[in-house]
Image 1 (tube, one colour):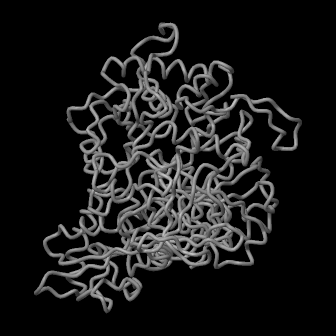
Image 2 (cartoon, rainbow, N blue to C red):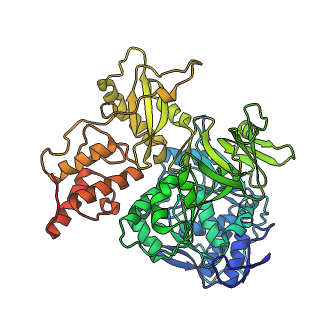
Length: 632
């Protein structure tokens, strides 16, 4: 499909080849590669790769996968860390006709094996450096993306015969499940291709754009990031994990790589804003778009950015979305005037091919201005859940015109101007740093401990958007929820969560209670749960705390205790084992740097996020310069 576009960036009209209906994702990518084989497709820490080389590497791997029986609607695990090999593996799976199932290497082995079993993948694409992490000795054949089975230049002419069509699966991404088991969302090629077709007039993406892949491939925001670049001939910059956790380094990457399209959860962007405010003058950026998604956006959090950089360059856009409706479902530019209504979280209008139905508990439409549950209808609605027919029937419906419709569980209201605003959930589902979490899955994990009678998990905001999970636990009859019981059971609960759950699903605090508060209807009254206090936190307090006094370790410990809300921290305790999150780590480093008058980065801690390790780094810095401010 050829489109004449009047330059979205103030340039002369340009003729562009655009993604067209009826084609698969990998077919559109291949067309871009054949048009401009020498253009850089992906930039990563290990270097750059051109469209032509990326296409050739994916073709070679695809032929290997075809020989192993991969074809249309065949699921293939993708167990690769961030880098060029990840994109090679993803493209090869699609070129072979299959659908990729992201399996994050950072997940605990129990979680990895659960995903492998539930998806029943018979082939897993991995890389040699991590192939042994969590995969175990299962029956699935492991193919290494970093070891070409055919030498360069030995490709057969033409692309592999993939046989897939637009109605075949492109990927299956797992989300948290209320039954204690994650559920895989089945997404077809046409769901993704039409996402870019229908947003083209708003964004004008093309080969001049530079995108970052900031998010985990297990989070569907990555679908938008990867294909936003590769379908339009742009460049994808893969952000190393440690850089994604360091706002200052990430800001430098945006500047150095001349990124034009940035996608962020609101909580992550708040940390980037703080890093930007620390630069005087502001860092020169090439951004033309910042697109928000993954969680509720409160416009007032953007006030410092808008005051400093305005609301037009870059343009700020909020896009509400759900994995089951293919990443994004709405569009709303955020402007300075939105700051005057901080109580409203605007999500705008549905994408042109989607319809929003706001219904009451009985499934009847509510009048404008009245809150109700959002049901999204149209071709963005995905196929359903993998091997979960009952849940699929419950959530995937049909609207009055026969269009597929997804029952979101989100409460919204249609405003007088025809736009929609997000209000919250109709159930207990939680969004933490963009990840959708069913607290019941965590509660069932904790309830497996023999000394726990009941548990409930809720989010708690520790400030600056640092939202963490708190678990309230009730002991079995005969036990008292005192500090001794909490200390005894706490370590076991932490170990249980660490063995079974991804980091974003692990509680940061455990509060022991004699009983859980109930509403008049006998349900758990989550609003009546007390805020976690330092004395209620479960932590392994055996052994020595950081040395008392004026030592570097003692000063760091004081900061950690405040950030983590703990009464005591040992010098060898891991920050994340104590309940810290990535946002808490960023806040901690901000405090440490201000206290010691330094500019340390989280990467200095390497694999040891401990007081002892950080104190060693600070000691080395102090030995290399005269400290200008070391407070006691």
